[in-house]
Image (cartoon, rainbow, N blue to C red; front, side, top):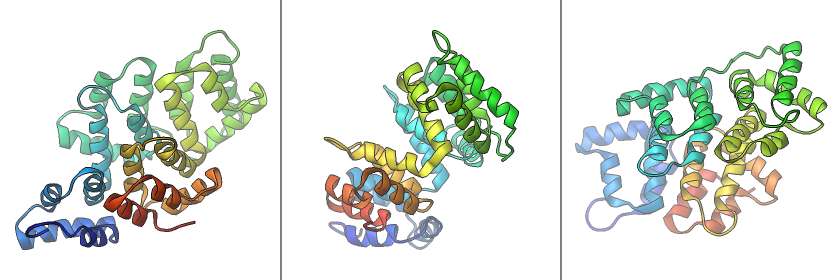
Amino acid sequence: MKGLGTDEDAIIDIVAKRSIFQRQEILIAYKSTIGRDLIGDLKSELSGNFEKVIIGLMTSITLYDVQELKRAMKGAGTDEGCLIEILASRSSEEIQRINETYHRQYGTTLEKDIVSDTSSMFRRVLVSLATGNRDQGNYVDEGLAQQDAQCLYEAGEKKWGTNEGQFLTILCSRNRSHLLKVFDEYRKIAKKDITESIKSEMSGDLEDALLAVVKCIRNKHAYFAERLYGSMKGLGTDDDTLIRVMVSRCEIDMLDIRHEFKTMYGKSLYSFIQGDTSGDYKKVLLLLCGGED
């Protein structure tokens, strides 16, 4: 970064080929040997989407989620997709860490910000997910699973109008194994998949949030593959989503996401990124992707 111009390739080489743990160590070593803040220096040298990727990679995992949540609610308008994606896909432990870090970072709670930025049933779903209070066990109560499926059926398909609260209670608090059983039972009762019912009974952000919850319970990798596909399909690119998923998952489950992407869309994630991005931004994303399938 010294002097005129920037050696982007060197930056990509160092940042994208190290683990998150190593990058945190580089941050500290940079400050102790050079006496400057590396993130500050990178921000002044880089710009645009490429900068967002590099800064994202240099940020610890929890803090990155926290900053994305804050960005989603800052200023006019809300990035509902970002709020849904993070809150529906992170584990209870991750959500607890996000809450602690959010409070430390901004002096206010995540819940307060969600409440002031969203409304009605959608707000209630996000607040519920943000407590990180889902049952973490694996126990399946067969009787309760049938009862839950019946409750969901009666709250939606069976009657005129929808009791959304019932969906929230069951989908946001039960453990994963139990819910998979509930979804099976639901299909038997309603003769259709729970996702079809959510689509026909709800709309807008609430529909998106509950669908995300169901998808993450079933197959989180497929959910992220779908988010990536959605960010690049058609004209234009939703760079915020593309960057967030690539940066936040690159060391967790990128291989699984790539596999699901290929299975679902018949083309590799690599080829999609190649066709949708350019320059240093493309170079770094392809490195995070890891390879052609």
